[in-house]
Length: 473
Image (spheres, rainbow, N blue to C red):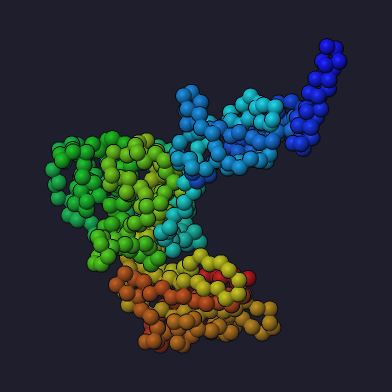
């Protein structure tokens, strides 16, 4: 009997060794718990990384749950791997998921790791940005407020949209009442290229206690279709403006405005006929638009995001129900103006963004405005350019102020001379944009205007000439 027991024991040991050698892996024990789990969210996905288990795991089990594993647990199905990272796909953007990982091998599966969370989000980028600016930073003066240095605040101050809460303060974090917004919107209408209506009584019964200026502004934005009121007979002038209301105001104002150079416009309806400033692209990154009260508002927010008007370009929350701050209002107004015909006083030249090597194409816009920012019609505009060089004797202008080693742009016939061959500003105060191709060097492109038959003299015209510099590579 003792011999038989020894024989059976020896046989079992042989089988155990053969099984171990046959698999090629000798398991020491169940894997330890993975540690250091982290999550990085992406578009409909989350990338997980962790520190490896000890005891030779042959795979990792990744689990996720939309409710913190209270009632739901899903296993992410991927290939067998000992890699210490995994990209969990097929998730819903805007939903918070909880993740955990387990190590496993032939001896068993570890307890789950400590959990981590991630919220997948869309990573779209706006598709219909304005090409040029209503407020080029090199042209617009500082507003002079001591409580903000925002360029967008400088912009709305320049166009007379705001005067500040005092001569030296803007109060950027304060909220905006609806009567204040009515004033801001009516001041924005004219530089944007729209016409202010009469301001006749529109039937609001709750604005009689306000000044004549405020009552007129409220009635004007009603006439323009920018507001419909809180009800048919009330405007609620002292209520604060919410972010969803701001989106509606901006979207409706843009549709009533004149599209400027490089602004985005689409057909009002269908595929022909009149156009208006808006975007038809449905992409966006916001996960909270279900909180808006009107479908028109959701459409407006998405359109403004694609136009680059919303101040939250990369965020996933628009926060439609909270009150808008004066700073955020200024940011949205300044960016909306980029799409309109609002441009600085005088002759202004701008170039589009560009990239690449070798020959570079730059779209050029030239606009002409009066001191009170109204379009100047029929101005003849000449343009010329100069290539930066270290060659001795080369310069932009001669000692007498005349052009030296400059050449005509693609739209100029006679460089540095105003004649009938030059382009004239249209009824909106703009010349048609043109594409200038420059070689791999640095070029200055100039635009100027004067009476027919005038030669450029830098001593006389240098203070009013517009210039951009294009840096090739």
